[in-house]
Length: 489
Ligand code: ATP
Image 1 (tube, rainbow, N blue to C red):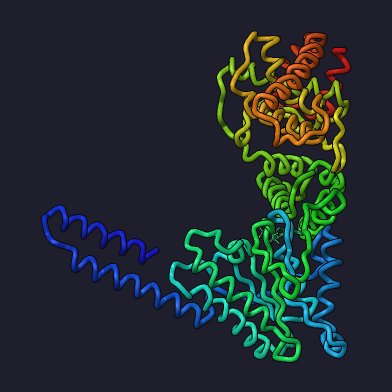
Image 2 (tube, protein in one colour):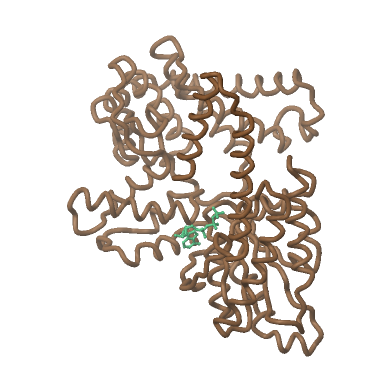
């Protein structure tokens, strides 16, 4: 930071001298050259000292990682290669050199690597792929050499028999060769990693295992995934309901939960959350409890925290009275249609702005589903369209508030086309021309919009009543909404 300010100042002085008519070229050249040499020396120094490329870490067990039972099992099996290396050597089995953890962000890949180090009692070094990216030729490759050197040193100093090198953002260091702009330097760095991995021999020096993590495994160079390098690939997916419950339990262990709190229901409504989201949720719930000066975390703190993590902070943004009525009609349309096609599915409807949303309806996920039928997709599209249709039915016009809903509807139609659920049947949609695709999409959407309009028209009184209640109350829980729907029906 200090150096950036100095650099800014120097540029300012040069600009001033130029405007005053001085010839600054020689001194400028001297300055730029010294700056580049200085940066180069600093980066060399970093390589030598190992700083910025390796952080020793400890303290995480596999028990501290919720869910991920398949990943943990696969990983533990692979790690037995390190634990029982003598047996492996006796049988002539070549050592396992690399394990690649792949999956969405925040799912616990770093935690798994730390737990692996503890499980195998290995020295642990953690680096990020981006730390190897340098504009100076050879520095990245030298850093890779430095990293392996450091790993060997750590093993010696800590009197261990093995080391785990964890490389996060593996796709930056290991992207397909030739795919980067300054690809020569990137390629040299990757080549060096391959050379170091190839040089890991069972009978020479300590056992070193490289663990890479990425959320874009498809971007990696094929040479990295070849047998003898990243031999094992472990998928670390978003947790399912049981996994989410386990993670919530881990992160609420040190927090005072009220006795009535049912973490099962929180796990149920957090479909699609990663471990990092769940950790953040428990933290937010504790902050909300603190703000209310409560001594325990209650269900409502947790529910509010789910909303905050999902949609962002509540905003004080105040729409006009007319806008508020339109938002209430829009959200009531979504909620009414959702309860009609899938009773008991709404968990909350609100016209309070949060994050980017002016209002929102939250649905209970229908357990963790991996497959959707045509009916389910159609229902979801109708729920998405219902906001705009409700606006049109009551106010005579639509608004820009439906843009996000249309995007969602179009994505769902795309899924139907891909799954052969359209009138075109099973087809390669990449071969359809724009017109064919457009016609098919429009036909599906028009049909579903007609069905949506029919349902809302038949229930217009209910829609108006819910709108009015929502304008007064701002937020309605699913149960309260359903009780109103019953009294109106
Ligand atoms: P990225 O791909 O962004 O590097 P990652 O998959 O490496 O993410 P971690 O850094 O391991 O994710 O997890 C981030 C935080 O989320 C952890 O410190 C932990 O608090 C929480 N977390 C993630 N997954 C789990 C899990 N399975 N069990 C418990 N906590 C988890």
